[in-house]
Length: 112
Image (tube, rainbow, N blue to C red; front, side, top):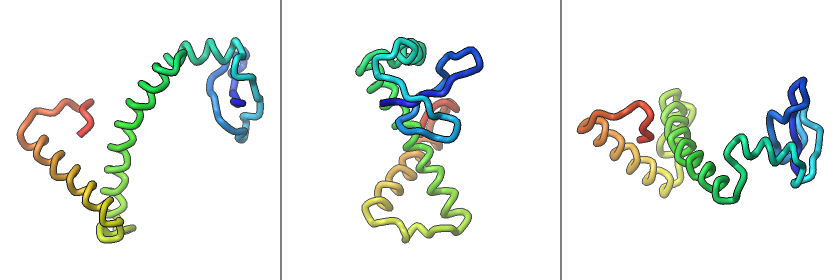
């Protein structure tokens, strides 16, 4: 069952899959307040949830790319520390991003 956080007026402000510091209220999956919160977040149907996760996946891929860049730049890891398959995928993405950036005007919202 999900855990929720609420604001001072009792409105749900977050949903979690486990209890955390400051998040200890467990609600039933069919709780009306939970349904209202999910609908407000655009998560009222399985299709909507899948769409949100898909959009989030794209942003996470870029985040992972940037994180790898940072770890290599700060010498926390070396490129050769990556498993071969991961290194190959990372390099393919880096080459593709550099090619796009060099040949197009890219909107800052684009995920390259």
